[in-house]
Length: 117
Length: 114
Image (cartoon, rainbow over all chains, first blue to last red; front, side, top):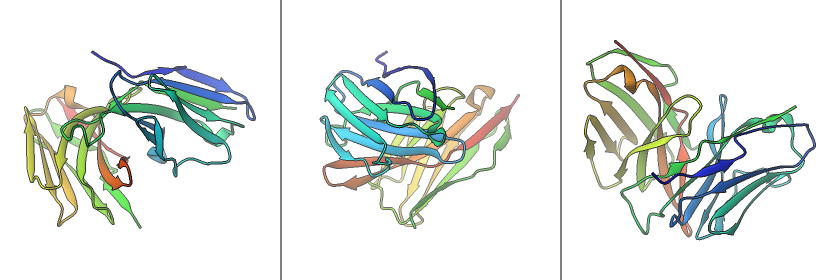
């Protein structure tokens, strides 16, 4: 089965450090989402891309977060500087956009568990 | 304000019964509504998608209804099994310029007892 691959699986870092999370979407998928999940807030949409172009990053704290898709096989989410409140599980998901299919949902990766101390 | 509400209390049912989970939303007009399953330590897994012009959709033991007037979706699992125990998330696909953004409810935990 095709998978969305996220790295690293776990990351512990000190406050103030830069964190980069990576996602390899499923080949052929043209829509990529970044979500953050915490017990308190649930799954929050941070940003999403269609055909590598950012469509909405309104859920992201702009001063410290950035999301990019340098090519169709890689999406990155960067936090600089990181803060303890950024501790969460970050998920990437990919799929075909609704113009291509309206029968299927999205495939999630296993997530990156980030702990900022 | 815009909200997606799922029952925050866990749902406990006996094996073999039908589980019914609710998703209500306010101040959204979703083009599609999706349901996902999430197990501890894993990412959500897609189950079903229903369009705004559809009333009901079925897949094996799963059934989803979508009432855009009530702004509500119901998710049913018939003949439930202990393996169905998980958190179930509803998600709305919202039209915006260039595409659709997908936003999630907080989920409802389901426990199926043998």
